[in-house]
Length: 362
View 1 (cartoon, helix red, strand yellow):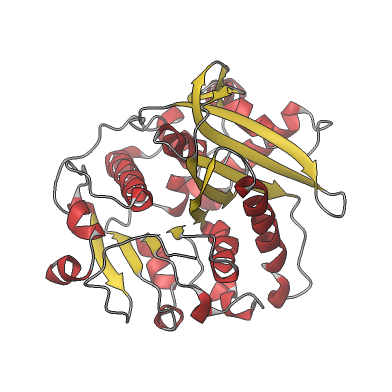
View 2: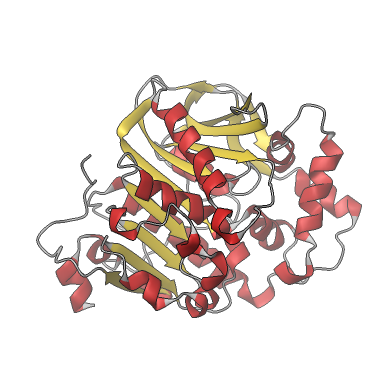
């Protein structure tokens, strides 16, 4: 604890209070803004479809999104039947290694699809510049997280494309990184973006392009690694031509579960010189997919997390508060973080004790 207080501004704020937000699993305590959602389907340089989805502070309007709306919005062609998209989400939900579910009955799944969320589809955006968060994700992956950030004054932009098998491990990540850079270039040209405040977000494999992009460009100012495997040997991180650890200068928020911590290779962390604020979730009951919409469905709609539900709910809401504080980079008078849920540390060989967490210039 003393070391954390000495080295940074972030964790003293997070540890200052034991209060927690009230948690409704698919509805975090929203910020002051209404939220809009829209999607843009456009071709890449080779004519292949790219799907860009936006969550943004809105003034009014728009039909409220349901889970089905988000799933269907993830189709890469207007010719894809809605049932194909919803059946695909269900197949993932029932994968045995996720939550060990039995087959979900059709009538129960229909109720799952009707789950209400916060965003209004094509709602009128507020004409003001907001900071940007970019991510490699489909709209049905993290709608709760992205709505939460938008309600707190961020534009969140995600991009997805058809997955193509890489010919070898060296080429696993350049194309996904190219896509995320395409999204960045597209978004910073929009009039409602504060281009001085850009963060890249990634969960699971989604952290890889965010990680590399922060090495490619100084336009990314903050990096959020939510239980991503970037430091695990399975991700083949060091093989990519974009892997240039000396080029990573920006602060990273590194949130990890117990299981991911066991996979992380400490040698990969040691070669980095950027400030890394690590938050380790203490409870091994919290799983990697609890942070996805599949996890929200299992706990909120299907009620299949049993005795783990309470800790999953509490960790989920507190993690989102931590992400928000990290993005806002400012002191809040009443931080609502239950510090007993996490182990905190600052990983960096640099002496940053005399400078608080701030955006990297460039």
